[in-house]
Image (cartoon, rainbow, N blue to C red):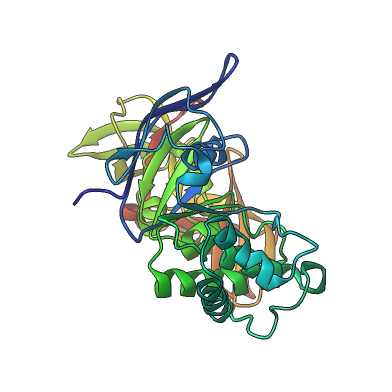
Length: 365
């Protein structure tokens, strides 16, 4: 199937600084794809190049197999929603939504019909006569979304649109965006640094780091099968357990921890030579904490509980190993009252859940 949008070898330089480096990406019609990454990773810069708000240093952007680069921004039929709502303050809600339609010389009757349709879409019927200053932040963002969708854009770009909202309102508007995407079928490219937001909204997520895309995939793929330590660390909460690789067989590693404990059958990511220093990724919810000091469970390592934090349905238990790695376990909130700071314990996890990455740090074992 031909992609709706194709990004080919896109680069962006500011002087000697390479902000976006050789990105290739295809977006399918109707997809919700999120650019996720830290500040300065190139995600917004790429979005602005697609919109035509930033020049492309080299590469190509194709929409339905036709280049966008020679087309001025206002003729690309792309909708844009920013963090700042960019509503025109002296215009009413209806006038703000109608503005891009008047610029496109739509007939008055058609504009009125479309504005009413957009107000229904974002659940703001009855608010058409209000000014932006009379609306809450969430309502203003809904108006911005309605305006961006009013002229039926081929693609909708959203740059950190909910960053200024509090958690409760952010989740409410996220649900609205998902509903609107489902009802309209519009293709959305969404930029955020919030991993929870990316996983909650997206069909696929592209993880950015230093101007490159580290991995593109479904949310569960990024979380369960990260292809780099950066992705493993950025998507979800992570523990990295120091170890040394003692053997490789059929894509699985045997490792020894600094206290001498050994385990087998750890999934090795990429080519990892025997004898190298490495780290095992273990998610907090995969860890089990046992106070049995007489024996260590399969895959277990010894440690001491440093902190127990009650979070209602969950309890976070921080455990310091004998070699000073601090690992966090997330356990059910019930049945953990016996865990307390200072207690000796054993940490274990199913070996199939661990992923090993080569590590530059070293230890003596």
